[in-house]
Length: 456
Ligand SMILES: [Zn+2]
Image 1: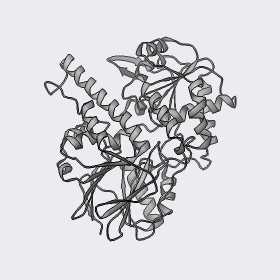
Image 2 (image 1 turned 30 degrees about the horizontal axis):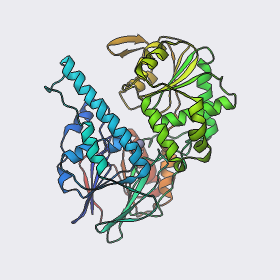
Image 3 (image 1 turned 180 degrees about the vertical axis):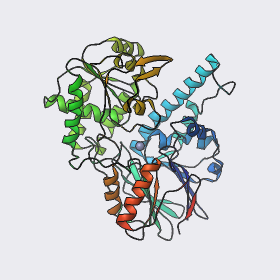
């Protein structure tokens, strides 16, 4: 068996890893590359291995793990896609949204003449997504499934609804684990992740490989930090929380509700201005078994009456102009687009308002620039001064920090386990590599894009 790293190698997006034997070719995740343009350009390269591929296995529904699956089918793949039911529900939502955005972008480029291609083409369309969905095979976690001489099973990764690590075993009993993205123990709503019993090799995500949360990193400390930030703006100003539609938004709303109930922040109106987050929330309510018990009743019963969902774009525009104290949760989480950009136009110039970040901000995104102290921001071809307060809540993350990654690994790895680190920026990858080697004295590799390793 050999393993080839086709994406998320030395970077955090584009997860694609190929597992090959003489008779079998399995791809684990098929994500889009996101971020700076040179990375996004990789999405236009064909995947020549698609025709000979036997199966696609998906760890979870985030775009950087599933977003390129329509392209895989366009390049000739016709096999089954194995995933959990929760992942299938969220993946449909995320893929359809991605197709819609790409079709809109291409349409905009053609209308304004702004494109190198004439006419501009979307990366994929909604009908390409239909083909992917037809090949979905949903499976339960914990049970082994045979796959032409191999077998595999899903285990709870505690990251978002449906998220799973995958154990794959070949006919000789050689076992390899793909972590996917691993959830944080300080998550307020996700049930804690499980771990494999043992493995010969592991491909471990490293998003926060260089970050250790505080020693007192409990959910209550997280809530205290959040209250501290929010109380800088309330009760006079407004709080704008950019959040990813899937996972972050639900987590943030749960935290706000808890803080208001405990009277740690003032009671002001709370808005969820993201149609996609609203749909994701309904899926969370459907798959509550992945959530902590307190979060289950919140998502099912309390959330609908506590939050005002903003549906139409014109209602969203009204909300943007309304300067009364309130909390608005809106997407996208890294300020790469979406309704949150319109909110920023009236929030950024006002000293009494607060923008509060609650998730990972990739290099060169507007989110990262704001946290780093940018003084003005360009939105839709206009410049806005940054006079508002900017906060970043590091410990409310959907990713395990360095300590949690090591602890997870130590639960099943020993000196003979081969470790491959992916899904991280260079500093995170090499910091984590050093720490794991120091602790376990195991063989730790940080694969380059396209690199192949022989396993058994
Ligand atoms: Zn993820």
